[in-house]
Length: 76
Image (cartoon, helix red, strand yellow):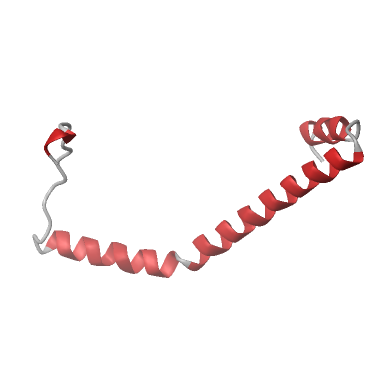
């Protein structure tokens, strides 16, 4: 366990039981969210590679044009 995590746990241990439960729920929710994102990104590599290949093929065939950033958004 890192020093920072130990410090956080020590401080959380000083809170009321209700506050400790709330902090624990936040931490567990964050971990779960990170795991879902990791799984989604890991599962999307093939699709992203396919899209990149399509984009490169279109570029090589001259079917694309450079993106020009429009700094004047008033003429929508």
